Every structure is written in structure tokens, then in C-alpha cells.
Image (cartoon, rainbow over all chains, first blue to last red):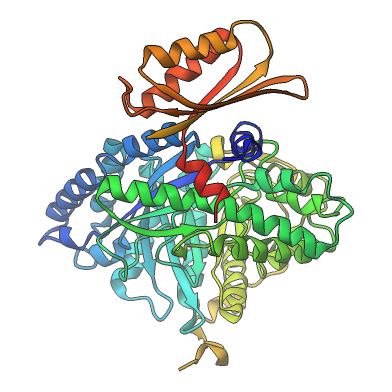
Length: 450
Length: 89
């Protein structure tokens, strides 16, 4: 073992904020379906608490033994709308049982209060979606998502319209916490079934019974690797990112293998995403700036992000036996110190963020908008993002917070990893007529690949 | 099972003595050791065998950290697999 390699690893953790962002246990809830909502809730509680009983302990043990922090221990479950289908109007009973179970086992979040409606919203799914504001207001650890489109199916615009209202209602129901409920909700296009990251994690129906999915982090490590390399051409920058991503991902692979062995679960995937935190030195925005941009959001940002996202994938893919999840670079505003600075200085706008989502792994993420933003405008933001995802055959998402009673120029503090969000202006021109047309946007021709 | 112990900090008398005493107390054998001064900082790396240790690795890492705090240096004790995973293809 080379001294320099050992010290490099130690420094990554000590000085460059390297961590495993999450070990997420994916659980199938199908074995817990019973004849009533109450009995199902009880069986769901038992299943989750039994299966995930040792998850937090194993995560902590691994962190101690390998000397790499495991920041979050989480659970994702089968999209709950499939479990609640026979119990229209009683969805909250099952949601509360999941929240209690998550608290009992000590995880940070439980994701999967979700519905997949890209090809049509059934009556039980509509009932489920209408329960989301109450659920997000009355539970603490539950995260929710709805998939409204896919490259194969097109975009279900009735669901898109409804989600604008749901997001507004969620903000209103959690207005004492600046609309915090909306930070736990994502609208997706091309949602993935093995995503370990919140708020969009759910355990897809094609997954195994109990899987371990690991999300690594490491913007700080990539940032440090690029310091002092200002004169390199961009292709060499890409090489450095690739090598760094390889090292980071190998740790994810090791942790995922060991965690699944100790928990008697199946190894699922490693998600290669660069996930920032609000801590200085752990920012994706600052990586883009270190490639030569004065401020993130200026012209050239999309190109720099495209390079970064691709190099992360290329470096990571050889380091793990199974890649999955979102795998790329995340660009949440409130959770990234560099992105927040970009918004505050006027360099990073919502329009530029939208362009950036065409080349990275997620979408408009953790963006605060004025509380009086019309529901239709939020729906239209979701439609735009879904269109980018649908046409580009990639996952896109919207996680926006219309902050009740607040407007542009103000900042909301969500605390912890969720950070602080400067409220960004939205286009004041109406999108209402488009949104109220309903129907669906047909899938693109290249979605028909068979 | 092997682990890697790294000690980083300002050089002063008693660092090796303090670390060695901790390892001996817990039945940990030193298999390899290298020590240098890098950019003015004391840097020591040990490969240790913890097979006969009285504590599991997870608890040893916390104990090692505490010893470091007492001496005034930073000590990490990590499973060797983390280094192999990261630096070997």
C-alpha cells in the first residue's frame, strides 16, 4: 500500500467532505397487503420494522470500520398507491404507519409515498395523489413522488395539472415551516426504480424483496482534484473527474456489498451521483466555476455540467458491478453553497437551471419560488421538465417550494442538508390555458424503439 | 483482519509511545510502520493486525480517536479494504 494513496483517502474524508451519502434499503410492501386499510397499516409497520431493524446500526458500524461517514440511512418502499388501491380515502392510515415505522428504526427518511401515472391516472391514484398534502403535513419522515411522464408513454397532463395544485396545497398546509412539505415531494419524468436519494426514492415493482442501494457523494473531492489545474484543456479535466469518480464509487461498491451481506439483503445498485451539501467546499456549483466560470449560471455552465456529468458516469461505471439510480451530478439550489451564491448574485436563473437539467441527472431541484406563484405555472414548470426528460430519454424532476407569504429577495432556511433557498422569480405570463387543456402529450417517435 | 492506522499532527515527544501503548493494551500487532515529517507535519502510517484484539474494529476506531485527542494528534484506524477498494483496479 502506497503512503500517498493512504493519505489521499484520509484527506478525502478529513478535508474534502467525502462521505457515503446514503445506504437505502428498498423494501417490497406487497407481502403486507391485507383486507382492510387498518390491517394493511399494521402489517406494513411490522414488515418495515422487522426488515430494517438493524439498518441504522449496520450503517454506523460500517462508517466506523471504514472511516467514511455514512450520512443517511433510509428506506424506500413499493409505490404506496399500489398498496392503497382498495382503500380509497384511507391512504393516510398507511402513511402514518410508515412514518411510525421509520421513526422506530431510526432512519432519516422513508421514500415511496408514490404513484406512477405516466400512462393514465386511475381513480385510486387520483385519490392517492390528493392525500399527499395532508400526508406531507402530518408525517415527518415520509417522502413522496409522482411520475407523470416517460419516453415510452408521453406526459399525462391531467396529472401534471393536478400536481400544481397539490404542491400549492402542500405549501399552504406547511406554511408555518415556509412550505417545508414541498421539500419532501418530487414530480418525475422517467423515474427510476432503484434511486437511493430522497425525496424521489421508491422501490420499483421490478425490484427484489429487500435490496441495498447506495448513493455516494464527493463534490468536495472532485473540486479539490481540479485545484491548481487551471491551465489544462477540458478533455484532461474530464480525465481527472473520471479517475476521482472511480475512487469514490469503489467506496460505494464496498459499502453496498458489505451492508447487504450484514443485513441479509440483496445488493442492488450504486448511484454515482455527485450530491452536494450546503457546507462550503462540497458544492457542484463550485466545481463548475473551477472549470473557468466566473459564476455558476453564466454562459458555458451547461457545457461544463455536461462534461462533469458524463465524466462522473464514465469513471464510476467501471468501479461498481451494478450502476443505477440517478447517477450524475445533482444541481439542487438550496443544498449547494455555490448554487445559492450564483442565485444571489443574479448569475443563476430558473431558465438557466432548466437548460442545465437537459445534461445532468435530475431537474429543477430545491428551488423556492414566490408563494403567490399560480398552480398552473408550477404545473407548466413540471411539464417543461417532463418534456426535457421525455425527449432526451433521461430522468428529470421538479421539486419546487412556493413559499407562502414570501417573495423574490427573501430567503428561506430549511436547515440541515436541505439548506437555504433564495426565492427565485418565475415568468409572470400565464400558462393556465395550456395546462387546463388536459389530455396527454404523445411520446416522441424515438420512444418507440421495438 | 488488517487495518491501517494513520497519525497526523504536529511533531512532539511521546506520539509513537502513546500509540504503541494503546495498540499493545488491546492486543493489536504492528505489521508494518512508516514515519516521516511531511511539510512540517508528523505523519505515521501503520498496518496492524487486529485479529486478537479485545474490541471489534468499530469500537477500536473510536478508542484510537480518543487516544489521538489526548496526545494532540489526529488518529484514524480504518479497515484495509477501504484503501484497496479505492486505489486498486
